[in-house]
Length: 359
Image 1: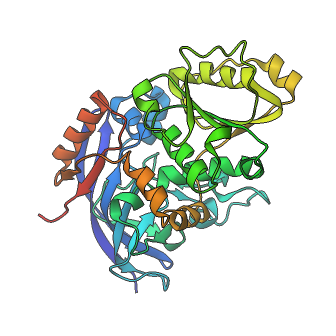
Image 2 (image 1 turned 90 degrees about the vertical axis):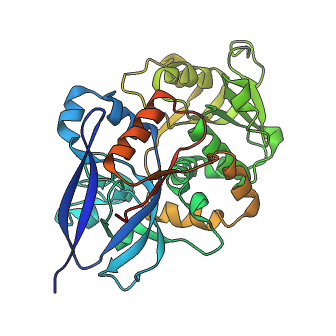
Image 3 (image 1 turned 90 degrees about the horizontal axis):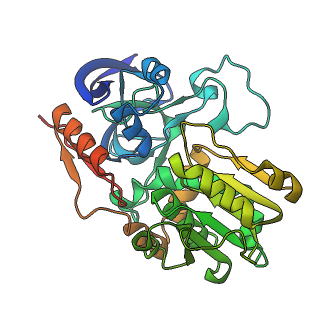
């Protein structure tokens, strides 16, 4: 028997405009209906909302419901793995193996890079809706010892987890030195994970940023301000470097990382930019550097992060990036107001949206 539900969606129809749309959705075998309860806003959501994407990208992806960082409660299930009432973290990447099983996949490619996949809030309706019908394979139960406000930080944490998997051996090797560029949320999530999940010592871990107030939040590592640090003449050399800046800062961060990279170092690129970034390829070649692009994450990454979030010290570090209050949203108009406010002043801490679907 086919089970169907009604979902009220807050769809971005054009930059700055959210409209409410009701839609009937069927729940296929192996899929689950989830009522989103708490979500956070990503810079990617803001780029869509403000129209700060290439015109052809906006034309292709809109209209759509935004948001891909969130949790919810199961309301209906066509899977034996989940029952009504389960608290779950939503994995926004739906692999091509699940969504389009007829497409042949290249062996050995991680599911977050599969062909025919979809990503919530990126040309595919995201979490800003009253009922998200989602594959059971893309949900992870939240243990009782993890609160909603910590669990909602899982998605961005998993992006960090997947990215640093490329340098896992260097993180565990106490002779290897680590450098991270970026004092924003992505940098903080990644640095926190390196510290509390990999236990990298402060003595061999430095974070570079441009804002001393933000850098002060990184009290578990050594910090340097890029505005005063002499990259050209620094004697320090690093074995693994992570770029977590994105946007207009990517060029400087990547080239500064190349400047202080040791021979055969790994550089992880995590920042997103709409423009092409010129880099110092001469030193990349001379030093034998390896550059790794990393984006999004998989259900397995979520499971590992949720397990790591049971660590009280890690939870305490994550709480620094939580806001003092949550924005309660009851209508599409209220959602539009919150998005507009955050777009005007994003801030360092995450913005949490507490959805109230009762009308």
